[in-house]
Amino acid sequence: MRQMLTSFWLALFLLQLPSPLFAAAPPLMLANVYRDDFPLAEYRVSEKFDGMRGYWDGHRLFSRGGEIIHAPQWFTDGWPTVPLDGELWIARGQFAQAVSIVRKQTPDDAEWRKIHFMVFDLPAHPGVFDERDAALQQIVARVGQPWLQHVVQLRVSDHDALQAMLERIVGQGGEGLMLHRGASLYRAERNDDLLKLKPFQDADARVVAHLPGKGKYAGMLGALEVETPEGVRFRLGSGLSDVDRRTPPALGSWVSYRYNGVHEDTGIPRFTRFLRIRTDK
Image 1 (cartoon, rainbow, N blue to C red):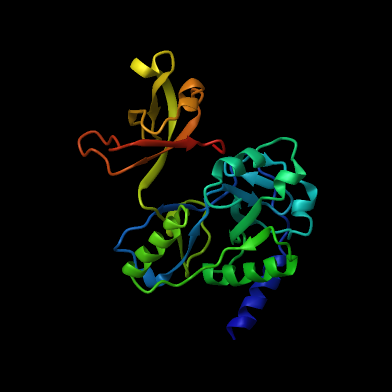
Image 2: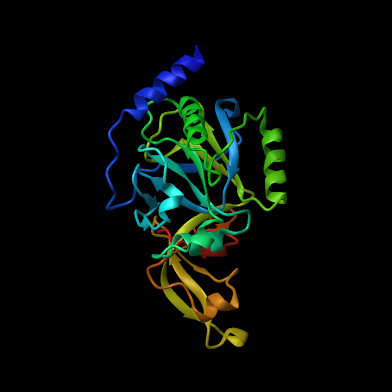
């Protein structure tokens, strides 16, 4: 019965008109942070791939920020005329290389042979996540391309098993885990139907000033002054390489940082460390 329902939803879904091209950011579901009090039995768990978010609208690939991704024609030939949500990824620990390849205005065929589109959702499908995931598996299997891959979703019994899975993935060089609520619809907003779990917290902030270095960093960047979307400003210096200090992220650009909690009185993140420039924002 379930297989018949899945096939019905898939047939109905594939009859939809192609989605429009996006002049702004595509309508993506965004993740909240996992906490121990979430009902884990309701979620499906997968690896969090450290790549660049990609949105296939049925015609072209877009970044999270709405920029066109200039993939070679062969890369997307045969893809469905329905939206796909996923991550453009090479391998664990290869984030910078993946972003460098994907952001080129003129694609390099040899470089794109390294890229995989790890798809984890069907944004326009009318069903709940479990139904979307079953339909997605069928679509990927029908396309039959090694660089278009369905992200495997697993059930995890309890929090201890989830932590063990996290430790294994991170120990192998992975970034963390993603959790999708099985009974949820795709909603283009940040909500608890999609969760992320990492060994540390991370967030993004906008660069508002370059603070000069002292001592061994004289003549270079000492720290970035950044501002969160909530308006909290703080200095970000730890984690910057000498290359970052000689050629710092531009004013107005966005960067990612890791932290452990916030100061209750000011809201400023504690133990911050620069991670990377967010070239997709």
